[in-house]
Length: 504
Image: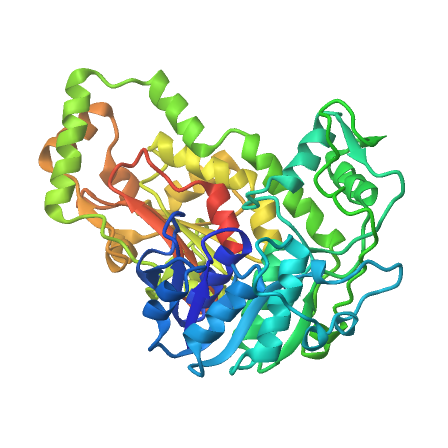
C-alpha cells in the first residue's frame, strides 16, 4: 500500500513507521525536517509545515494514498487543512487522537461516551488546550471529511525507551533511588498503553483492517499512580515512597496531572481481532529499558578499553592505512534497510546446522558478524548482548553471532563466555560474502598479525586472511532487514540496547 505518515519520527510514531516498512509498504513521512530518523532509504521524505495550508496543498494537492496516518493534528484548524489538502484522494485516514477527549467517570468508558459527529468546533479560536483541541479535531473530520476516518483514542502512553517526555523514567529513577513521589490525595485509576502496543495497533487498524470510526487503544487493566509504582518497585525489589501534593522538587509526579478516573475499555478493538495484553505484563520490560539508559553502554566499554590500550603513533598510522585499504577494496557495503537477508545454514559450536529461515519462523533475529575470539572488541560486544539475552528472548527474538572461526574455536569461546545464543561458523566467509561484508587483510596487516601471535589460519582453518566487516542486522520474520549497520572500523559497534529496541 501507498502510505503517508504525518509526523512519525518520534515515540510510537517512529515505531509505527518501522512496522510499515517491515510489512513492505511504500511509506512517505512528512515532517518539518527538524528531527532526524533512522529509516534510511526505506522511506520517502517530504518537508512541510503541517499547519500551513498553502504548503500542504502544494505538497499533497495531487497525491493519492491508500492510508494517511496523522500523528500531529491537534485542533480543528489542522483538520480543516487536511480535508482540503487531500480531498477525495485518500482511501482511509487514521487520526491519532487521545483518551483526553472523554470526560472522567468512575465507570468504564467506551467509544460511545464521546460522539464527535454531535460535537461543535470553533475554527476561529486563537488557542486550544490539548483535550479540547483533540475533541474539535475529531468533530471536524467526522462532520466534513470526504474520506473515511478512524480516530484512534490512545490511552496514557508509557515507554522505557523512546519516550521523549521522560515520564516513566521519572518513576523508575525515583523508586530506584528511594526518593518520594508526589501524588494526589485520592487514588485515581487510569488506563495505559505501551508505545509498542500503540504502534502495533495503529499498524493493524490502518493497514490490516477496514474499520471506520472512533476506537480506543489501551492495554487491559487500570492502575493508579501508586499501583504503577508498586509494580515498578516489585521489579526493583524495593518499596516506593509517596507524599501528597508538592514536596522536595516542588511538583507533583508526571502522571499526577489528572485528578480523575479514566478506565478505557478496549472491547471494540478486541471485536476486530486485536488483543491488548494486560499492562502489568509489560512493566518489567519497560523498567529494564529505563534502567539501561543510565547503565554503562557498550560504547563506554569500548572507549575504556581503547583508553587502556592506546595506540602508538606508528600503530595509529597503520590502522589508518588499513581503513583506507578497505575503502579502496570497496569493503563493508553490507545490506541496506529493506533488503532481504540472504538465507544460510551454518554449523553451531557443536556441529549442529542452524538455518536462518527456520529461526525467522519463530520470530525476529539479531545477526552479529564478528571477527573472532581473538578480537577483544568482539568479546566485549558479545558479553554486552549476553547481559540482555533475557530481554531479547522475552521480546520473542534471538541472537545469531557469526564468525569465520572453526566450530572448535567457537565452542571454546562459547564455553569461555557462557553465551546463551547461537555462535555459528562461517567457513571461508561464504555468508559474509553474501552479505557484502567479506574482505581480505592486506599484506602489511597479515605480517603484523603474525608478529602479534594472532594466527588466523589456526582460528579459521584456511590461509585466505579473509574476515567479515563487523556488522549487526535486525531481521524481521519475513526476512527483511529493518535496521542495521556495518563499519570498517571494528572499534565501532551498534549498541545492543538499540538492537533490543528494534526487535521490540
